Amino acid sequence: MTKDVLVFAEQRDGVLLSASLQCVTAAAPLAEKLGGRVVCGLIGHGVGGLADRLDDAGAAVTYIVDDEACGKYGALVYARALSAVIEKSDPQIVLLPASFMGRDLAPRVAVRTNGALATDCIELEIDDQSALLVKRPIYNGKAYNKVHFNPGRRQIASVRPNTFAAASGSSTKAERVAVSAAFDASDNRQVTREIARTGGAEKDVTEASIIASGGRSLKGEENFKIIYDLAHALDGAVGASRAACDAGYQPHSRQVGLTGKTVTPQLYIACGISGAIQHLAGMRGSRRIVAINTDPEAPIFKLADYGVVADLFTFVPLLTEEVKRIRA
Image (cartoon, rainbow, N blue to C red; front, side):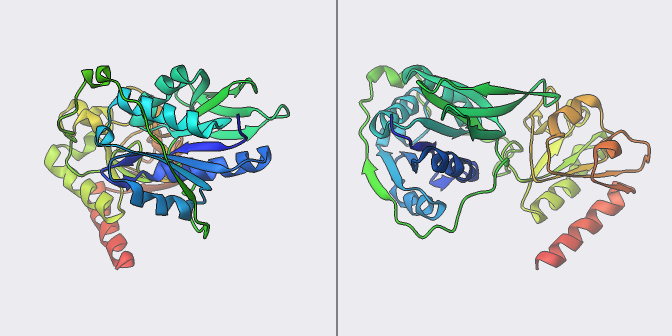
């Protein structure tokens, strides 16, 4: 194996996922400690132009699988393609975003390449044996464990989105290497004909750096418009508590909490959410938390960095207008 660190540069519809560039940031100190390079793997159809963005992030080499079979994500096809990239580049460490695609792809690739895998990592370093050492949350962030990799095996880790800043600012021109993958007819046992997204073009809460969430206090689906207005003004995503989703105010795809999605944005704004334990379990990893509630004794205030005791129907529209004014 080389001492390189390979980052799977996930793209969707020709747009690089920010979490992929965040993985490059995580990879840089690992490669420096090992004495290797940060290299990237790019898979898709007609995606060669995205390599320029990886140059800016600091990639030394970009391995590209550009094939019509990879036009839409398919687990078996992408697993075969990424395995081919790993075989070609022979890295010691492979990093993937802990996105929906990354969580589906990582274990498949680990099996194909005889690699060891740790998922949803928030800290990564090189130990005294020149092997990967990672920290990952367990029990919905109530505890953490450290995973020591065997230095003699391929070391694969998925990185939680928004844990690192997105890499940029490099002036180097990365080498491009075309990689061919031998796809099998059996890979097409599952065919993706159309990708339907709940909520249209709205951002997914697990990947957004800013989230505005609403609770049952919104009293109806139509009142969530003020949460959407705030989220759009901040270029963020819309979340909801379990109570709001169970009441039908928002689809469960937006639910944040123990039985919903775990999020780690830079900014989380909880509007009319009291702070039940199951909700806190899904957002306690947020970098900054703002709580808006009429009840000064609401549990959410114990976790919040900033608290506003106010009627959300009055305060949130005012906050939205102020955000628009500043951004204008």
